[in-house]
Image (tube, rainbow, N blue to C red):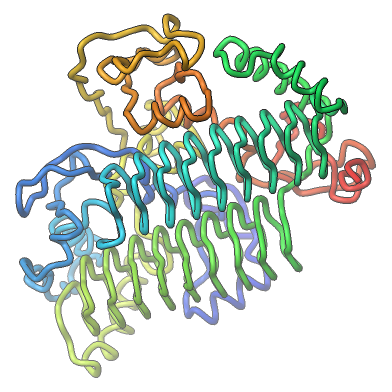
Length: 552
């Protein structure tokens, strides 16, 4: 078995992977799947945004980029003909490693400063990795939403706040991994539920509180059945509209859920597949947070993808993608690419291209083809040069791996890598990652108030809170409440949050299991299972058969 050049661990390249590498005309990887995954995660910064000026116009906007060497343009300026990406083109220097030449290009060509689909964003300035939004605020990795705030991986929703991995839902708050839910608060891994609090693993339930693993139930509290009248009375006693009542319920629900079996992975409508939070897929192996996959392996946070491996973030009608990050929207046959979008095909070692085809080692191209290092060639010249360039890369031990770490402009702490595999600053730097200390923006407010001094209920909160800074009870960081957010809390009768949006996001992340797969035994039948719950976790974990036998 090969030894990973990053972590020195051994790993196996299985027969299906070997066949895929042959089809993509690439060598077997030198790094293990885990290290390859972390490197790709580092190329994705969706939600850590900063105010900066467009380097072309001087206008201020929101961007994931800070402290970078290359120019950063607003999207509507980047896509114009006001600048020419071909002016940065250069000849191949056969006396130097290719990665050194490509890095120089990455560090000089202007980058699109905010990843949005121009023309589809209405009154939603503070978003990223987004398209088709209206009246949204601070959501990322998101499409087709209206009036949504503070969330990531939000698709086809209306009026949801502080959510992660939510689809086709409305009027939901602090929910994680829910689908087709309405008026649900603090729920996890639930589907087709409504008017409920603190559910986990429930399907088609309504008017329930603190329940887990229920199906088609109503008027239940901690899995105990009540009449409608009894339920309403107990709900009133639980004080679900006051901050103190919610915190008591949060603690009790967490403790109660630990006493019941957890499904070893969350999947639905899959065939010959393995993964977690994997839906509507066929022959997808060890894929996480994905849907509509076919013949894929080691894919994370992608949808509508075929015949791909080691692919992280986006997808959307993409096929034959290998070791790519943040690429998507009708992409085909990309190898070792980052942040390439919309009708790209046959690209190798390219970054930040749109509509490009048949290019090698290019940055920031728009609808170009047969280019190397942003220099134009004829088709015949290009096809003759590429094999020669690959041989040159082999001589420098470059060919066949994703872009090295020094190509990434994001700090480890800004990227998805921090979310999945948190490190301290010292640990990250020791592993060779970048770390960026980003100071908080000073808030111009009339006064600050500690979260602990906030009113218990939203009914007690004055309109003037829009002029305050609330000091987070965990991090001490100040944050503001915006008008649209306040309207949501009042409509839903929810108390003002006591945590900074980043701390609320971190709490949602902590509610999910790892994206790493572990070998352990079912806690009921002892059958061997492969699950995202590590053996150190305290949850009761059942295999599929035991879980279904318990729930139904």
